[in-house]
Image 1 (cartoon, rainbow over the protein chains, first blue to last red):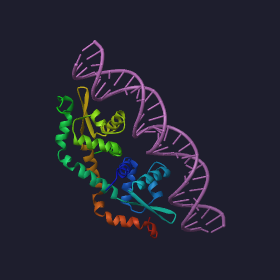
Image 2 (cartoon, rainbow over the protein chains, first blue to last red):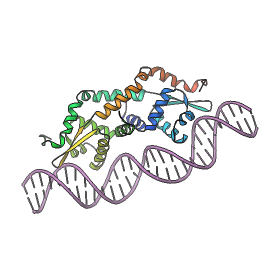
Image 3 (spheres, each protein chain N blue to C red):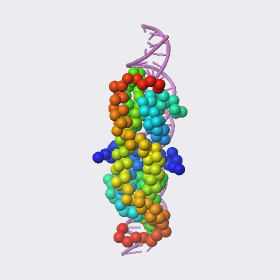
Length: 116
Length: 116
DNA sequence: TAATCATGTAATTACATTATTACATAATTG
DNA sequence: CAATTATGTAATAATGTAATTACATGATTA
């Protein structure tokens, strides 16, 4: 069972455009090196390495040394875990989402509800 | 089409245990008030209001005044949008996740690859 | 082995996040 | 209308994030 801390780390890692772009590129090119990855972005190599550290902490990226290079690989398991958890939590609600939006939209105009 | 900024906001909003708990409670009790919501947590009402502001900014919570209370409602649309986007991005990869994990696990021990 | 190449570490800076307490506003009720 | 209730705002403090430049380490190759 995925923990709250793991979910925090996974969502935080995904909450930055650059990190999502990094993840896309790792997925597209498994084994890509740190330097080649950094060359895709306008920010410094160090900034990209910091982002990689965040992604590794969340378990979304796995890496290993290969000579003087470090090769990067994606690990979808944290996303899978989050997906499984949130599907359970919200799947029933998703089916009813239109009525929920309607409900919310009318909130400001409604009379007070009883029993709350 | 969901923008990068919207995804940033949605993931950031979900990247805190308290905010996910708030979302769970709003879902369980649509129309719950701010004060009643705050009573569920150990942190101050103001802290909960700050979290609510983050959730509203991401569009995950919608609220409306009802007398001197503010009633809270969940909006699953941002989650649905993120889900749709990431299903497109990763669905093929998920199917192959076991081989990817194996690939990554062997990374440190492998010989250099050609052509990179 | 000296030069080069790829990555890693340290120090620093600017800004954002998360929380607090104290006070202000606005609606309800006795 | 005074007291209460519910929410909102302001000021502040501690911590975390995201980026930079400068330098260090460790592997390859001429």
